[in-house]
Image (cartoon, rainbow, N blue to C red; front, side):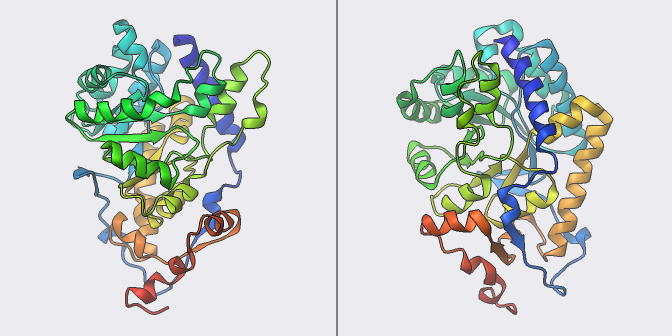
Length: 356
């Protein structure tokens, strides 16, 4: 499994380079410019509430990797930068460390280097409630991510496809741990129907984890000798599609999957995300530029998010849901087919009492 973790990093970085400059369904989300609505960005406060817990930033470092010496070094760089930029950080799946305790330090480094920060542990939905408790203990975690990755497991040469066991496992994990449980997809998205089911299972927060970022179907297919699942690349719902589809599903939403720059962060916030996770972009900077380059990048994201929120007149990330938004293209088509009225998003200011 350790070799697989290193393969994931190498392949994900290659895919990140391929995606640079490419279009995304997030580009179908257009914030309407009102020239007199802006506020001084210095007035913007970036703190957010997630499941009753205070996060210092609406940007967080989403789970990526761990379990080998190489990925442990990557985690150290990510954690140091997150500490210096004051961002929450999530681990990659700690399953490998639960099965082989000698690998635990490659994950524990996240807490060691970010001792006072918000740290999330991560396990798969097929793990036991006891494993979930051990994962939280390993990182002294403030919350637990449980990841769903059916499409990835299907294509993974050594994958497990007992998908029908996942719902009862999630319910048991929610009952067993004493920290908030966040269920996330790893790149195929969470539909509104799925988020509603997660709510009923006792989950606290859903991270939609949509398409547009690292495509783990492609990653796993590249590890197959025959590479015979190439046609499944891109499977799933995009991040903005998930936010629209799950808006009324009854859980706080986080957004991740294909977040390329700070404008994408504000776009996701405007569609109702409480906070926005970044993975492959930060991973690329960590590997290609090192620790100080990543600190500078994370600080730049914080500054730019504040600037864009000020531009649209939002004094906080939560206020972004009052910005007027135009939904265009394929994303609008999906919304129409799913019975979602996106025209109301274009005139929020009028509804809220401002001018249209």
